[in-house]
Amino acid sequence: MSRQAAFILRAALLLAAAGLLFWLLSPHLSGDAPDSGKSAQAPGTAPAQGEGQPAPAAAGRGGRVPVAVAATRRGDFPIEIKAVGTVEASASVGIKARIGGELTRVHFTEGQEVKKGDLLFTIDQRPLQAALSEAQAKLERDRALLEKAAEDYRRYQDLERQKIVSREQFEQVFSNVSALRATVRADEAAVESARVQLDYSSIRSPIDGRVGRLLQHMGNMVKANDDNPLVTIVQMEPVWVSFALPEERLNDVLTAMRAGDVPVLAEPAEAAAPELGKLFFVDNLVDRKTGTITLKAEFANQNRMLWPGRFVTVSIRLGMVRDAVIAPGRAVQTGLEGQYVWVVDDKNQASLRRVITGRASEQETVIVSGLSENERVVVEGHLRVTPGSTVEVKDEPAAPARPDGAAPAGKSQ
Image (tube, rainbow, N blue to C red; front, side, top):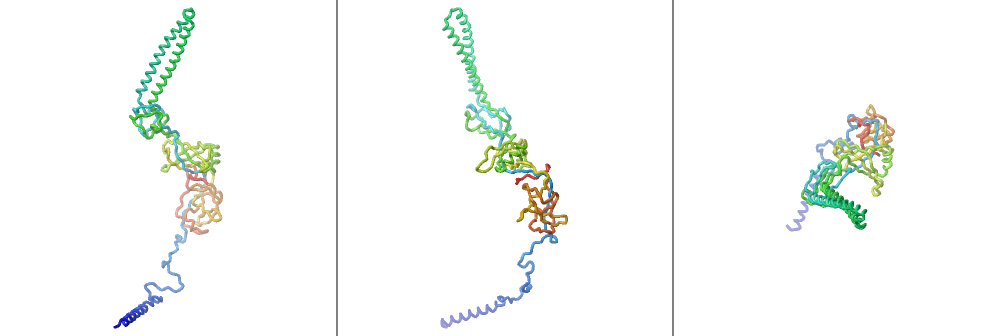
């Protein structure tokens, strides 16, 4: 067989195979394939539930919308501003030596509580004691010379009246007495100076407080007025908390201070309850870089929860809204026409209520108008509630209350 005849035969076989394959697949391509286990569906009918289309979420039992509600209450609402503050020691002293010498003894342990006047360090006293003894001996010698000169002066007075000695000799004796008196006074000052230097060898605490890390140990040579202190003492009771507020709040702060003591709460991260203090300082300048002003509050800190250097959350109370209707902050929603809440009646039907709000904290909001006391408002599930819809109440927590009747602390608006 020639090459041309073989090529034509192979081409004819390929065309025949292609035709056979097309004939076998044509029923499937035209949609006339037999049912493959699924029921046929009439044209124009909607697909059955669960066939390629998600089912709409259930609205609750019997079509009810599940929501969480809470009750409004009437009470006093504090006007508070929240900020981040830094705890500062009311006094901090770096203990330095006033004289040089060998540090012979340390009378405390690191972290110990000390009282004012407690002995902290002792510097080698032997050179200072020797200098004091030398000054005292010189004083005694000059006092003896003064007594002898004073006796000579009394004798020369009699001799001068009798014209036995010249006036010049008498004046010389008088000058000697005066010089010795001045010398004795100088010796007394030297003795006092040596005694003071000896007292400086015993370093005592100038304040009540807590000692920090010891920087010079026994046996080291210390220098007078060295740049680095031997140890630092911080006063822990009371402490101060420094914080900054926006300058727009300055007038409110000053008005509250003129009315009386301004309470301030400081709360460390792990504290069970905040510490109560009072505002005592407002800086005399506004920081133009940040637009804030620095304030300080004093705290007794008897339980030592406020540690110098740490950060705390500060709430400053500037006043109180008396006898206000208070609602949970989560209940208040904002729409195109303003703020509103969903109110649930005794039949568990929801209705939309327009409200006007006042001061607010992180958890609660003062309702100026639109709500009254003990009304149930939706706090969860707002998006699925429509006017007149019946709701299913998941839980109904009691309105939060504090012993003083005030709202939980938060940043006032």
